[in-house]
Image (cartoon, rainbow, N blue to C red; front, side, top):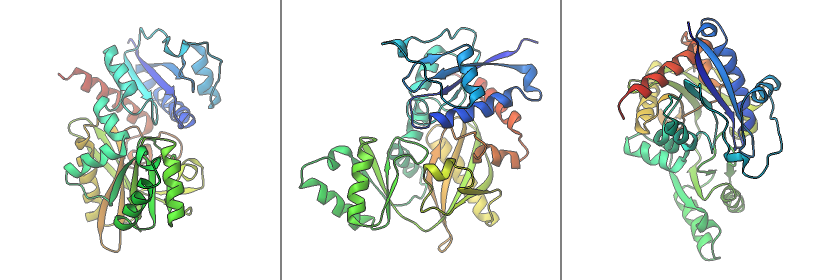
Length: 352
């Protein structure tokens, strides 16, 4: 039997470069395990932090080492792509901007080869927190209060910025969270408890992105649900993230021992059903495909469930919730990787 060749694309030009390598290592192992070993051949492609694409033995070395490989590039090499011939299905294991935001998906679409995950629209809306929240609102999904801000309002004349801060204080109050709209994995997020912290946080977020979102703080448990499928997606068991830090920042998320996963979450069956239904609604609202992890706030004091965000390519590291939630439901990591490839083939075969 001829093996299907899987183009494993990882690395990328984002702050989540190292996380992408860890995820890709896990997926490469999964595609070499059990029945997958006889079905798939992995062809790794590594995107350096400077944007250069590498194929052949060098990406294998990165996977083996589990850390970035930096080879000095010459001018223009970032746009000289390696030979893509022979790839049957792409598996873009990219997190954050320049990979999870529709840019690479557009390239793969042009190549007319199936690829795992959401297309251009779902990826772009899923990455931009403002567009995402607008899609959720249109679908009738409850959320925390928020205000969308442009960099021009922050880096403006002395009259505009104070009025912006006044508006945030009046409509959201403290504490509030300031987030760049287009960065993943809690990069660039700050918590403000005072006017001084708010001003500093807005200035910091503006250095990352021209679109910023400010959200009202809420005392809630953080619950997550995995989604798998295309037009008829299924939701997983609900899990819970708990941590001792002030909020779920990048260090807490990716440092072992900093956070704790509870699968299943200790909540009522009614809350589980509500979250699963909302997760599927969110998935369909942004036109996601293949996979996504949807995060929620559960305000125990009032019984409210508020949607936080959707992640169209969640992490596949040792500490990642997405594969752990499906494993609890009886889908092993190798089987999960296989299903994602089959879903990519299914979506590619549909008429646009």
